[in-house]
Structures are given as structure tokens and as C-alpha cells.
Image (cartoon, rainbow, N blue to C red; front, side):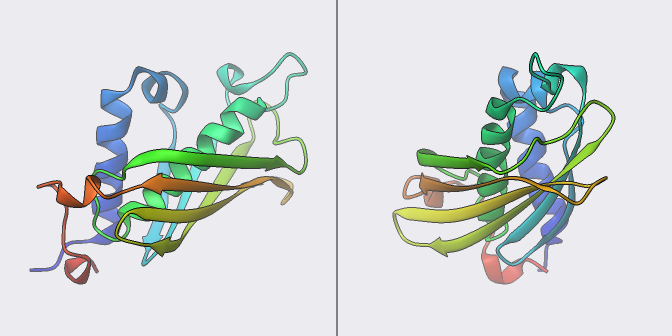
Length: 157
């Protein structure tokens, strides 16, 4: 039996969003564009709630997107529960954008081990093509591997 990888990742994101007040508040408009083996692309239209006092994207929001992008890249391997964060690192390269523009989040799973997963994430401004931030996200996945909601990776297409 095969399962569509994009639909699986979307279901993981939907469950995250609906069960977290934080994600539900800040990321109502975040959506999955594509998902392939170890890679995910997301988009977020920038809204006022995402801005800092300078009216550009808040750095804390960008760090949260590193968290989400890394987590969903792990889900491309069939993990419905994607573990808990061990470390998140974010480098801010340029202002992310302003209200009305869109961010594209590109997450990559670099290694999925038995205990830890290592991911990298880039966040781009769609309108001007500028790299806003890049980061890495390390997660402890050992317990997540036991979730009954996981799907064998070889069943994802």
C-alpha cells in the first residue's frame, strides 16, 4: 500500500497546528508546497502578527520556522511524531520581509539516526529572492519512532 508523501506531511502539520496554541496563533496560513524524500517546502504569507516594531519579520518567527521546517523534513521519512528539540540554531542573513510578502521555508533532513535527527532549513523571501535566514535543528527522535501513527518510509510515494 502506498501513501502520498505530500498528503502525509500535510496531515502531520495539520495535527501540529491544531494541537498547539502557539502554532495555531502564528501559523494559520502556513502551508505545505511540496514534500519529497528528506525535503519539504512550505510557504507563509507575512501578516502583521509576524512583524517586529520595525515592521519586518520578527527574528523569533524565523527561528520558529526553522523548528517547523526541520520537523516536517523528518516527517518525509514517515514519522508522524517528529521528536523533541535538542538544539535550534538560526543565522539571520537579511530582513525577512514585510506584511504582504511571502516566506518560503526549505527544510532538509540531513541524517535520521536511531536517536537523533539533524536538519537544515533556509528561509527565502519569495518576492525579492533574498535569503532571510538559515538554521539547523537537531531533534531527539527515539521515542517518536514508536508512534503507531508512523508510516513505513518505503510506503511513501
